[in-house]
Image (cartoon, rainbow, N blue to C red; front, top):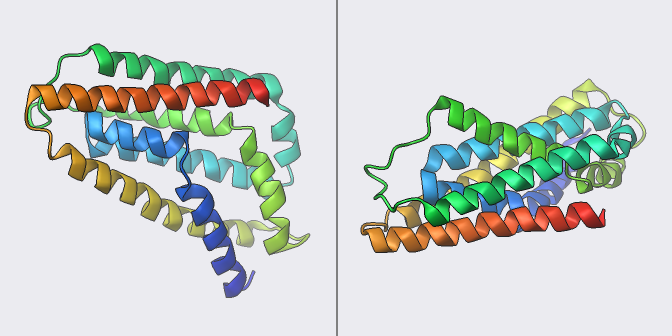
Length: 207
């Protein structure tokens, strides 16, 4: 794969990754409500899910993955239920200023990361995206070398996209100084999580 093909793939993937959707909404909501570490943990989970699908595509297994209907549906519904549960918690938990709010421990961050992995593995559009996109860049041959180069591009693009969303959300979080403002912010973040969960449920039912 030559440099121009990698640049073209990077642009196409950036447009895909930066477009509004449940993942970006959740990254922003988690950052506002629980801090940058929570948003980054979710972002890392999305990257793992993306790289797993890229690996499946590298070995010609995207079609198989797209046919694993029951498992993917279960993952999708479980992830959506978790987002809606987190939305409920944000609406009902006491408002605490960010400086003294207890941050999530390693176990919480791992749970957030695994939720993002599950949601991305359960995304029925992901294998279709790679099936449609990859042949235009790698032709009929797709080896481990191509996988490594594309994986590097994906990680770099996602670092920019996730980092940008976390940075903006964290700047907004810095403005939270009173319980009433924090309560409103929590409910806005909770609404975003609920909408992301509902969107996942709708797309799962229609797929």
